[in-house]
Each structure stands twice: as C-alpha cells, then as structure tokens.
Image (cartoon, rainbow, N blue to C red; front, side):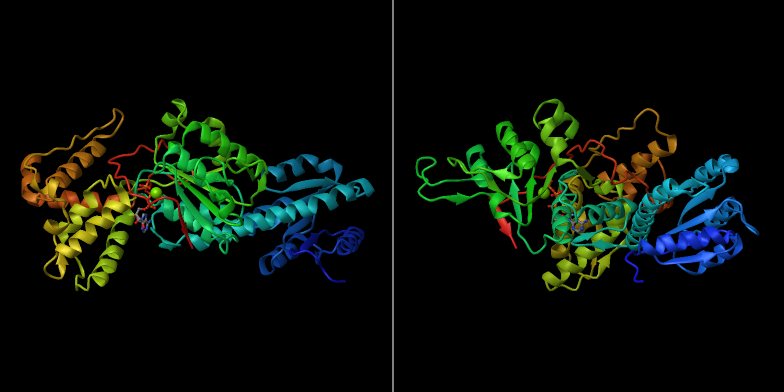
Length: 489
Ligand SMILES: Nc1ncnc2c1ncn2[C@@H]1O[C@H](COP(=O)(O)OP(=O)(O)OP(=O)(O)O)[C@@H](O)[C@H]1O
Ligand SMILES: [Mg+2]
C-alpha cells in the first residue's frame, strides 16, 4: 500500500492485539507504520528514524510511557507523542500531557475512541511538521549576515529576517515601522522578492510626496472624462500592482478620506476608478510603512485605527541603528567596499579613531546616514585609510562645545548613565580623545580603555526584538526625496 502522508507513525505497545489492530487501521489511512514492542525498542527506533507521531502505551516493559517521554525530551526527539492508557492510569496520562505529550486516549480502543484517534493523528502530524519547519527556518536564518538587500547580523535583524521569511508567502498585509533610514523599503522589497508574487509587479507609492487629488488618482485611477482634462482612462496603483505587491510608503501621511477608500479596497479586494461605476477585482499584497510615532498618529486621528488594524496583520519593527551596534561595523565595511569600487579609489579600511567615533555615534539618520557618511569619507580620503577627520560630519567637528544632552531615565543604572555620558561626549567632540578626556575629567589612556570596554560590550547589545513594537519616534528625520509614483521591475 502506498503512503500518502509525509510523516511516519510508531506504535509502541506490548499488547499484540493493539499493535496489529492499530497498524492495520493506520495503514488503511495511508500512513507508514512501524511497531515497537517495548519502551526501550521504541526509543531506539525514535532515535534512529524520523517519526511524526508515536502512539505510546503508558504501561510497557523496560521503559514506560512517561519515562519514554522524558528520554525523548532529553535526546531532543521532537516526535509528537499520543499516550494510550488504561482507565486506572488517567492521572498519569494527565501528567504525561504536562510533560509535553500531545494528547491521550483511554483504552479500550472501541470504535468511538478509534474515530477520535484518527482525528487526532493528522493534527499531531501537522504540529510536528510546523514545529520542524520552524526549527529548520530558525537554524537556517540564525547565522545570516545578509538577507535580500538587507545587511545585518544582530539578533534584532535576524528576527526581522525570520519574520519576513514566515509572512512573505501569505497575502497578509504587513506594516513596517521604524525611524527614517532604518531600511523599511528594503524590507518591503524583500517581502515581495521572497513571495511567489515575485514575478508580478512591485509598485511603490509615497503617500507623503503627493497632493491629495494626485494621490487618489494614482491609487485608484480614473475613467475618461472623470474630471476636466481627463481625456484618457488611467489605471491606478491597485490595478497596476495586480498579481504583485503594492508598497504604501509613509501611510500615516495619507489624507483621512483616502484612508477610508483604501480600507474599503483592502476589505473587498475591489477598486472603483474615479468617475467609474464598475468594481474591478484586484489580487494584491499590501505592504505599508511609516516612520511616525504610531501611538501618537493613532491618538491624534492622523491614521485611522480601523485602517491600521487592517494593515497591521503583521507588524515588522526595524530597530534604530544605535540599538544594534553589532551591525554598524559590518555595514560600514560593506559601504566602504562599495564606494571605493564606485569611485575607483583604493581605500581599504578605517583607522582606530574613525572606528571609535563610528561605533559611539548615535546615528539619528540610521543606515542612510552611515551610508552617506562612508560615501563622503571615501571621496574625501586622501590615503588608503579613513581617519576620524574624514568621517566625522563637519558640524560636529567644528563645534567647540559639547552640544548634546544626555538624558538618563530615572531607574537606569549608574553604569548605564556613565556609558551614555562617555560615548556621547566622545562622539560630540568628533572623536577627539584629548578633548573628551578633559571634559570628562580623566586621562586619555583611561578614556581609551573605557571606550574599548564599552564598545566591545556594545556589540552584544540585546536591544528590542523585531516582534515588539515600541513607538517609532522619528529622530533626526532626514526626509528622503521620493519621485512620484514609480514602478520598479
Ligand atoms: N540593513 C541594511 N542593509 C543595507 N542597506 C541598508 C539597510 N538599511 C538601510 N539601508 C540603506 O539605507 C538607505 C535607507 O533605507 P530605506 O530607504 O529602506 O529606509 P526607510 O526606513 O525606508 O527610510 P524613510 O523612512 O526615510 O523612508 C537606503 O539606501 C538603503 O539601501
Ligand atoms: Mg522609506
């Protein structure tokens, strides 16, 4: 008999009538079935072969059901376990559930119990497959330094990669949150590229860059004669993105009445052109982004709550660069390579002072600011190594005083307050060790030691995780100039 299911089943019981009966029934259901006549043999089989589900008798020679479950956990065998138990041992079955068994069935296995078992097994198999897939995914993505066009090896970025990988295949709407320059557009493109819509269009529309009427026209299109001067019909972004992804950038800037129309389109998956009567069905995945403080935008009614919930089926939060110092070095080196090639220069690295400044600066413009700073430094650099003078922005280099204010929340530790003060002082002097030491009332050698200690600890920062959604406060917002609606393929 051919098997139609992916996962094999193991029956572990010392009662021949049970193993024979269950084997026959489950084979008929299309499962590949093996039998073990005691707990020890079951454990051996589970260790050497992959099973989706084991049906284990609670009372077995050599190793009983509970002990088998415990051994499976210790050996990291992830097979789902359904316990088969006599009525007298129901308490132990409950205990087995607490120990991670999927479920239990009481003997005798009459037709009612068998029906229940037949319903239970595919569910347990599904759980096994989902867990197995997630484990594979997690370990596959656990060591990544790049994903799509994104660079980053911090724990936070790896969580972002996992989230993208998990949601890309679905049509669930996604909202990407994060300060300006954190890579929201790259995430939107990765979501498209990793989905099976990647052969369809990716259509990006910046809601902040367009006046209301034009935005509405770009989104929904119009019929011929819809308004003065509309001599031709025009397809909107929804129609143009059919079969692909539409990226609504800076969605919180969208005028409220267009938000209402957008919500309707998202709910019905249909759009009506301006001046049109016909509803046009569209198959699209919507990805939105905003660098606004969401709680504020929602509270002040800038972004409609019903639209937000419709968009935020899956929110992806991109942490600011200063919270993932572990990525700064990787990104800086990559940009250095890119811009030396582009500019035909033989710039090969950063000197210590440059690194100290790069790693301690708080990068309010995030990756975009770092990228621009490295590009400028490569162009300015006269030798082969970038020094602090090449990379530190002029306004920070020129200032004679410390402009920054260090705000330390009550509840922070002394060590944390010290760290903030030291790093910010150093950064705001443009990486001038001597001047920083003077300001902090310490010696240059002591400060150097302190900095290297703080910076190596920084690389391991845990920080916020991708799934969490702290308010995304736009700091030092450097607004990117976006051309009008554009189609990228
Ligand atoms: N993780 C990253 N790896 C490589 N490049 C990045 C990364 N994040 C951002 N960038 C680069 O930084 C610049 C800004 O990224 P992007 O436009 O995606 O930011 P954004 O979050 O959309 O910003 P804004 O809110 O201002 O629109 C781009 O040039 C992008 O290529
Ligand atoms: Mg953007």
